[in-house]
Length: 430
Image (tube, rainbow, N blue to C red; front, side, top):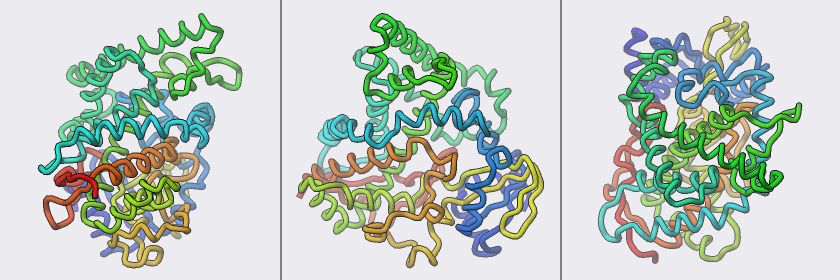
């Protein structure tokens, strides 16, 4: 198939293309995507482990994400490679420590309760937009810590316009066609990005001034932005304004749309599995932990990953799957294929959270957040947020699908979403 046609199919039906190629050619195959180079797709867990453990100076994930530079900025942890990436990652990790996550439980639960209680009962509702509103509110409070209502509204409105680009296939085509350099100068794109930058830089300036006036105490708040303001590089210097902006935008882009889509998929699955929804509601009302909610999240992300692949651009020759790949090859661990392996997950198309009860996911057989030194920084936060929201949903509402058949996958730019946005009837909780 010509590279341009492969690109067209990939942009519309990425998961179908991966599945069809795996069926025809096996665990390792090549795609040639116009403008993206030569991809070697892998799905054997041993090969995935080799890719994730490769020297980060050789297998460069940041280079593969460069198309996002106009959006997230050149200092984003997504774009850095090698030692630079590791330094930035270490700086940010404390903000996502497990103990800190627990402090957000009531905040997230309160936002979820308020959102769910607003949903009209007894009529069809598309839950993906509702989950987008919910996760954006979590970001405004937990990540940015914006307390002023007027400023929060301004940021909410500006961020919605910016984040919408990530799910608009037309913008996806613009990103690919123009490339990072020309997109940076593209007027319509700049007009959407600049209001967000202006508001974020104003927030950073004010918070720095408040911290300086109180000997740093105002920078030690519980939100993630406060923690990053207080973070220090190895030489004792703080993050620059530009560095902070880039990492905050990264957290917004990576943590909003993906979590909202994952929650929509969870709702789509739960609506078609009432016994699973009932068990989740029972756990939520009992208040005895989140073991089942965690299993629901893990099974949702296994069966309906919102991102189909991760990428490593090889800076030097690299051997994997019995092949010596030349420098410049894009090595592609396929999340979608790894998570559906029948030798790991019997009856892989069946939605069964019980797979994960008492059995934690495998490091190289469950990879919705990638892996190795590039594993998503916010993975623990995203799973924790999903567990909390799903508990509130199951306890406060009963959802019934509008259509009996499962919703097909719809590709929006780089994410995979329910075609009908998880459309359900919302009823009072049983």
